[in-house]
Length: 208
Image (tube, rainbow, N blue to C red; front, side):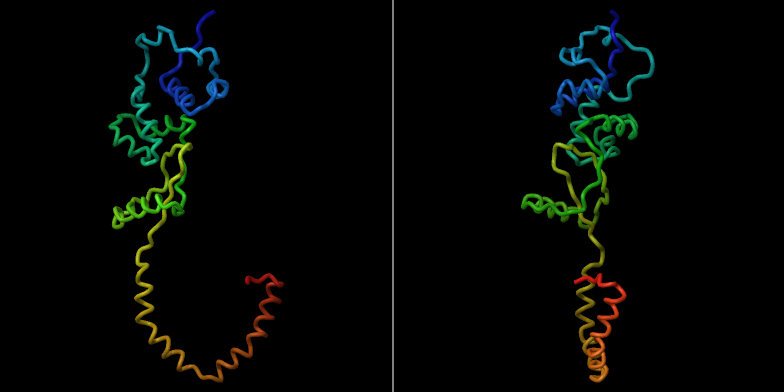
């Protein structure tokens, strides 16, 4: 009986990644269409060591291992991985390789604050470091076996509201004093009628 088609390096490390992620041999065989007998023993086909014709692989075995390990930290996106690891392959090639790793998922960062004390302290340190230069990235590669990261958006100019209130308090009091008492009494007396009109218009569906 002849041998089947040899696996490519990326397929080989895909299987290794599934095995490291705790996936059973049966499930790996189903996902990769490889026989369980091959998965349960090391590859011994000497033809894999022979020079192969065709284009050279964009990623070496070592680059694939380092990429998967670094991406699992959840701190980098594809372009940053390419720069940090000095990989010659394109960003799209890196993205395709990471998409084939089952325990990695490309997801949007949750816009919520961590609730634990450790997360709050880490978030405060990050905010102080990036207070004048927020990175703005919402998508990142993360390991599904680890907790998801989160972020909050800092709105510019938020402190001006309190300053406005300080300077405008006197103006509000002046405007209030200029309203005649008779006019205010008419408004109070008309409130029940206005309430009934709103309830009738909304058919009883009002917010408490």
